[in-house]
Image (cartoon, rainbow, N blue to C red):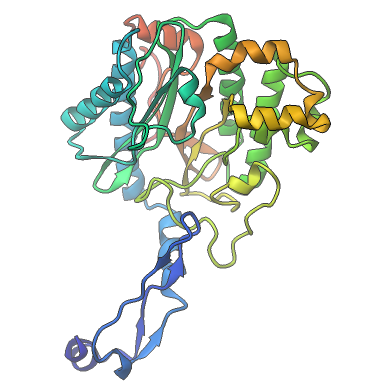
Length: 365
């Protein structure tokens, strides 16, 4: 190593990787080898430079991410059309992986698959070894499916929420529409110059507005936002970069805006201002998490917004999340994910309708 670097390459300075992953908090271990002391070593530049290279994707990278999204979207549709009461959560996981492996030549999930039905959907990272998608999906429940695979190391991160029976109840439809309307507004707002922090707050506003329309919340929307009610129902960030990692790097690098400190927004994996070539998830949600709801109901500042009778009726929903992957363009964004999203479309596809529907234009990638 010393001979190659010193004599053959005549390296004056060795740049080695040293930094902390802003998601995990884990440090990257610096390289070390015998004879390294013979060189000038810089540990300050490489980590941020490589992370920044991964923030803005090349056209070739976007092409791979678009392919992964097409295959994973089709696999989500296959699960929708097979879903039925009595099916095990792990069966839905297996069906998804089968479609990705057989149709797309994929070899690995991009992350631990999540298939959470009923109240289990209130667990944000259900599906791990301690809760391995082992529940039965029952008639009348919703099932939240956060499923993605990777190809050539690039992954998709996609979440659908569907009715196990194939038909939404009125309450399920009301909560689902609150999330869907938020997602549609957010995707329409994605463009260069917009900050992730502002998008997060926009998502909270639309979610809370939808919950008010559903009869769960009462009072003035601006007062709900000041009381951080958004974090009660969506205790995670609005989205994150996606690429070689599901939660890709570059969120809080050198010179980036700091992590927000307000409830809800503090969970954002980046607060950066968007620019063309970034690929990120847009994933608004509503969860009925007993611990967070109990805490909010004990505080007069937040308890005043609840209709508790409606809340008691909605707890069985567990959670609704809709997650698509988008690429920022010069004028807006392109949604790489292609799934039935409206309640009517979900019900039609679960009943056997084709997707994509005829006449639906494919995205630019």
